[in-house]
Amino acid sequence: MPYIEPIPPQAATGITKREYDKAMQRAGRIWNIVSIMSPNGEAMRDSMRFYATLMFGESPLSRAQREMIAVVTSQVNECVY
Image 1 (cartoon, one colour):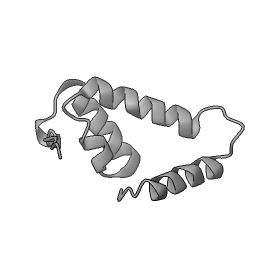
Image 2 (spheres, rainbow, N blue to C red; image 1 turned 45 degrees about the horizontal axis):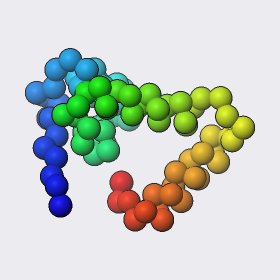
Image 3 (tube, one colour; image 1 turned 90 degrees about the vertical axis):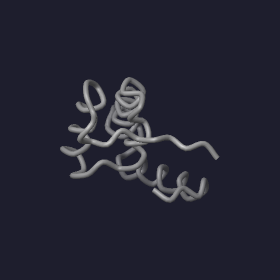
């Protein structure tokens, strides 16, 4: 299985540091799903923008429905995060 070495928050610079800072503001911590993208700050930034659009953007689904879809999908995929 491949292993990705995340960039620690104290070593982050540029886009990665900005995204880590945003993560701390959002959740008070940096979740693994965010840190695993840290070697590619642009991918992290774009992934978080995509997530924000899906979860908070205009949609015929309610916020609760979107969260439920995310939970069920994670369960089916046996995600531990």
